[in-house]
Length: 285
Image 1 (cartoon, rainbow, N blue to C red):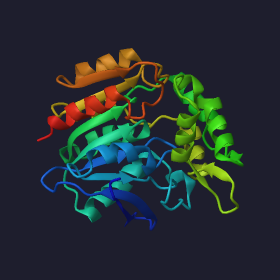
Image 2 (tube, rainbow, N blue to C red):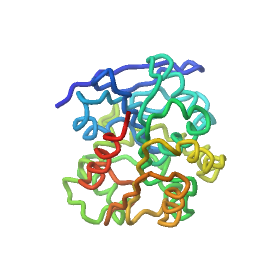
Image 3 (tube, one colour):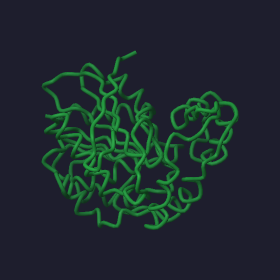
Image 4 (tube, rainbow, N blue to C red):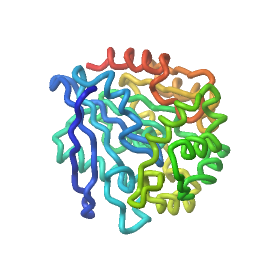
């Protein structure tokens, strides 16, 4: 198992934010893994295991997730604030250039950075996300985010996750659901199992309708010419095949891969996803 350091950085409004730092070669830009709306650094543990040593892998946890501090003002749970927080991380950690691996919300943030700081991005993987988000997926996410469910055992937690996510991962067995639960949940102080994020992240998400409020096609275009990989789950309700096709048109030379029989989002552990990421990294200068 690759060792990582638990590291912290400070946001401009005084929050102590956490990231995992897996060591790797200093002559390559680090992989910066940006998680989905309710997720944390554990989502990328297997990816980091595969690539650490050859690549430095940095897994930030956005404010209100994992071991990062919760915001005092829930209105700061928004993409512009997350990008500002990440810019502080890059400055404080001395990261001039990086490969972005963005799942869902993390991919939205990557496209925002395609507008604000494209020169920092050496290449990118956008995982089941694009400039257009399908309403069906947003409605589904609004239905569960911030619900604050509590479970007595990991078995109950796994079954609870299967209730809401089962149609997105039809091939999952019980062991897969338990592993998934342990990525997104934690044991609270009273011994109950809870989701590992501040339930208040749902407030601005609901008010905005779940969208970033920014036209992200220019942000995607800002990444054009760089090594790019677009992944889509074949069962995704957030990224349509039509949007994926247009993304490739906007970014000639990019690769698009659809992972069959998987919904939103692919875990990046699928063999097709892992092989596609290898191809992407082979193109990074």
